Image: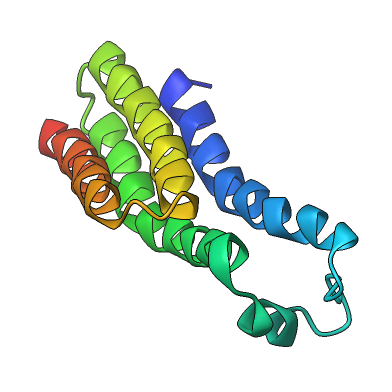
Length: 127
């Protein structure tokens, strides 16, 4: 399994880890996470916990292009080292994006989002 394939796995797990931050933090709040009605609980959140949920959703939205780009570049027998470096960059960018989103730095978040899309397109261009 290539580094890029491991990066796909990491990118798929990242949104769930981001969502867990608010769920775990809610243990000490009056509105504890409700596993019986998780979507309603998420809609009631505010502040950083609401932003964590939004970052979680955006993480899933970013996946299709990234996954397709890696698979297509590998099927085209593009330089695997280059694909691996770009894939690792994508994961690092998405971690950074989530932190920035939760921290409420909207302009910086947008710039980092564009960087993530750019990396996915750079991988796709290898195909």
